[in-house]
Image (cartoon, rainbow over all chains, first blue to last red; front, side, top):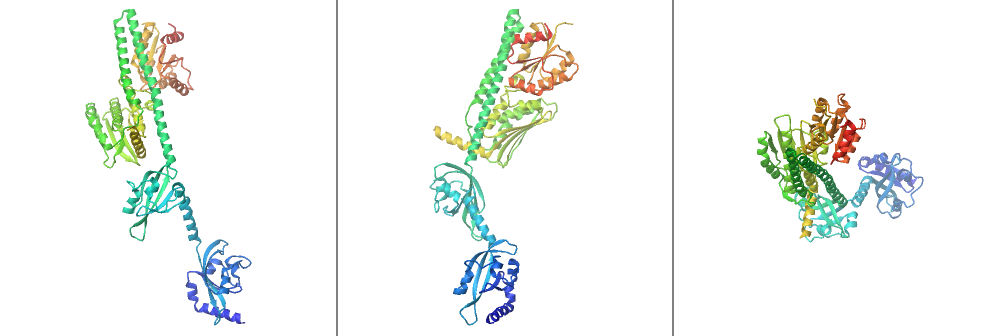
Length: 493
Length: 127
């Protein structure tokens, strides 16, 4: 009887405070010693489903008996409030993670606990997120460190520690690069200064002493709206990519050499035929006492000896298996020089030579002589193509620009253009459309020089419409070759 | 009107045109010359030579295209053609692209052995 009365008391209290009871942004339930839920709010019912005349374990966990070590039940013994982490089952049978704050309700005027009020809030999302974040932080295939304004590492992920060892409290430059002072061009210092994200390509040394190439991105961690207190550095290891890139550049260089040798053989064949032909004409002329034939034969010999000389000269300049002599130059300057050089020659043939410069283009490590040679070849080809054109009003345009971190030079003309057969051949043999005038080395040399810069030549052409030759230099490759060249230079010294 | 057999030399290398011309004329033939496939085909139709020597890689219209035109033209399809190539790889490419066409009468690789070439010409059209 006493119990029923007490239940009613609580229930009345609930009624009195029903508004408050329903307003609490938690799931609230009142449980008695026999595991009965005697009251619960709407939040609770919405989450767990019907609860009236049910045991707490049936509602909370959807199970048939009390939990083995029910923490709430302890409260009945010692009367102390508790916060409990609990895995429960919602009304749809889905497990959820709740935090439960349980407080005792003492029987009126007595020291024994009559009921427990349990306030639950779901933590499923935050707890899972926390877990995800910590897995991400440690296992993402990147190095992650948090550094303070003194460039000391205050946090580092597992991946980082695997490669660089125990690094807590040490300076990032000391750990990444074994330096004793801040690196020049440090992206983190930029982020500390302007609060923005910065990125750069760097190389460092891991704990085993291996060289490591990485791309690092630095992001600000701000406290409130104030200054950047910490910077988070995220680095991707690109050592293997770098090695591959080097292999590709080497392979391209080798391929260029192979094509050159094949082309050279072809060219020598032609010269041999000329020499042999000249010899034939002279001996025939002598036999027949034909002065004219002797003269023709002798001219032929002359011509082919001269061809040999110019071939050898071109070939020597072509065959230098060296790294280009790179220096930081303004690409615009090169274009201006070429236009100055060819303006008059072009005008004399009724062709307009135009330049499209780009003030935005940054300086680039280029071999000025090499690029000069390439552009000279392309422009003189373009002028020849215009002279061969059927249509009038010809022009040659040299453009320089940057496109997606690639430096681009373009030489376009509206001259004779090329058909499929010629386009296919321009780089493959010592091919020339200029009869005795050309050695057929111009474009080959250009391509070789461009490849030595890690770049490539793209050709577009249409018969009777004109041609476009584009030199593409990915800036990352230029920088790489620039660094390699400087390393090599140091070793030579 | 001469009753000499006429050979059309299609070749972009002027020295070779000259040498072959002198050589064939010395061997009792009449010669005409063209410096690319376009000119070559026009001369083949107009002058109706008895034989054609044809270079494959030439600026302007190539030997491949001219050979096709020769086969496709009723006037020229029966003229024997001797291909003179600069490289074996070029010849392979030629054969591959000419699969559906009849084989040319002969192949010679540069530098050309003139005596062998003459033997072939005599076989094809007589002295």
